[in-house]
Image (cartoon, one colour):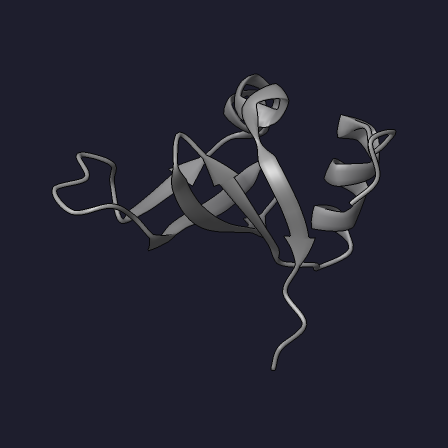
Length: 79
């Protein structure tokens, strides 16, 4: 995605039902919205012996906290 992709744009995409892949701390995740202020974060790829949770439920506040550290954001195309 573009360098000028802001958190507000990211949040609007999640609100519109998009699923977004991103890299965080050398792990690949998928995030999407479940309900109001409720986002599901799934671990897709990780190095061996990764201590991160495989599934987590985040609030918007937590998503906003980790957004600056997300890299390689891309939409889930469904293929």
